Amino acid sequence: MGLRTGEQYLEAIKVRNKAEIYVMGKEVKDVTTHPFLKPSIMAFKATFDAPWEEDTKELARAWSPFINEEVNRFNHIHRSPDDLAAKVKLLRKLSHKTGACFQRCVGFDALNTLYIITELMAQKGKTEPKERFVEYLKTVQKKDLALAGAMTDVKGVRTLKPSQQKNKDAYVRVTEVTKDGIYISGAKANITGVAASEEIVVLPTRAMGPEDQDYAVAFSIPTDTEGIKIIVGRQLNDARRMEGGDIDALPYFYNHEGLVIFDNVFVPMERVFLLRDWQYTSQLVEIFSAYHRQGYGGCKAGLGDVIIGATYNLAKQIGVEKASHVQEKLTEEIFLTETMYAAGIAASLNAVQPCPNCWWVNPMHANVTKHLVARFPAQISQLAIDIAGGIIGTAPSEWDLKNPKLREYIAKYLQGVEGYTAEDRLRMVRLLENVSMGVAFMIESVHGAGSPAAQRIMFSRLYDLNYSEEVAKKLAGMKSNVKFTEKAEPWRDTETEKLAKSKSIEEKKQQ
Ligand code: SF4
Image (cartoon, rainbow, N blue to C red; front, side, top):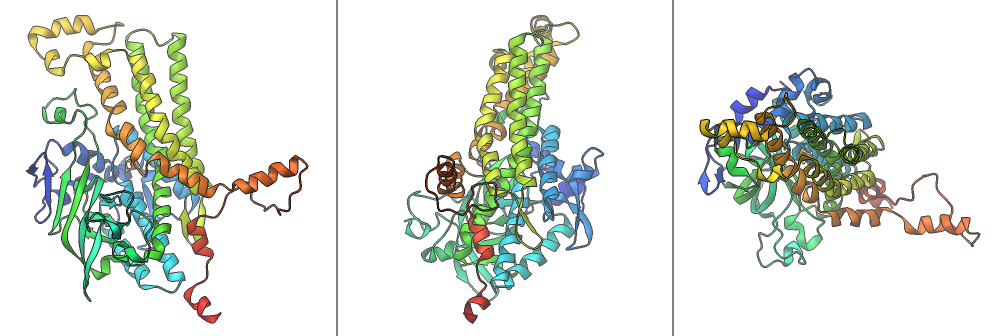
């Protein structure tokens, strides 16, 4: 099949028999109709609609050599830098259609990460994980499955390693290995779109040592599995979704995050891609986080466009769009948005190839992208609120507008330039309020794909200060013995590149 429609996706996730999904303390069986979750399901669905819509089908389809069929790009393994750039462009486009995070990219990045890691393991002589992974990938692609990626552990005391924690389940771990599979215990936090998914791809969240080997595990599991419990988190303004209106919760597309508990869950061996292989965890984390950081250049730039458009329209509604300070602020919003996007495209086109047919993003540029995203959305929102005015925090509700006794007054006092109605004003105000201050633009931008400190660690790991010092010493006429490389950038190899260049088990034996 390779490509499903949005309607086919909705049908597939309707019934949950085994997993328990909770929203505000109550169990939900049909996630597609629950008023709290429905906006999130609709945002996820946009990724299934994209291959069928005129303006996105080119970007949303890709050819898979694994099944010799067209697949949804969200289940595609990147085959070139252009594929990576197409991901960023698709994410920007989908933000235009949803005004929200559409939640399918974490699973997408998890697939590509496991493809590289299992390939590198195979090159070092361990071939089974790759064979299992490729079989799994073919199933995902053929059935066009909706994946969630689960990485962040609950982590307990942050200064302690997994094996040092008093709570042994502070990180997801293997509790038993049988010839047929493994048993899993623990929980993953902040898991984007998990209640909207059909499968969860679980990855370790940090580099592990030999003492943490029970925590070095990667696998996939159907979301509707016995022992899986999902507790969906709350968000700003979330109760508005349940009011049954059509204005106050605009854009009526949202992401959700959930705490996913694995209560002694059995995972069949054919779904296990990393088992106690702690030596590969630091590379795995590096690969995944860079992939997801690159993607933010697309989706957050797309949300920036929504905010710029809403701001401009509100300025027009009150007749200030030509004022020089408004023009200046809109220009700043454009600059901030395009800078995030440019970084995401640079991370794609300057891609790295750690193994034949593996394409990874440029790790320095991917980290720069996410670091910009951690800062700029707050500035874009602030400028938008500045232009939109105080009404963004004080507007009457849609229920006031719909009250026959009040409608006339609101129509009179909310209207500005002729041609725009009070309802137009309220609609645009609500869209701007919910997108500019929502989780996807404000919280996710800071913490998603790793907090800002994580990117700064990567900058200092990747940038070779000694090299640039030698460049300066040479220009200053000081003694310098360094032989300069052909590389234009003073960058060190990543852990992944070091692993790719290291010897295989066979080569080591021959020495
Ligand atoms: Fe995709 Fe962006 Fe949401 Fe991550 S934050 S899942 S990249 S839309």
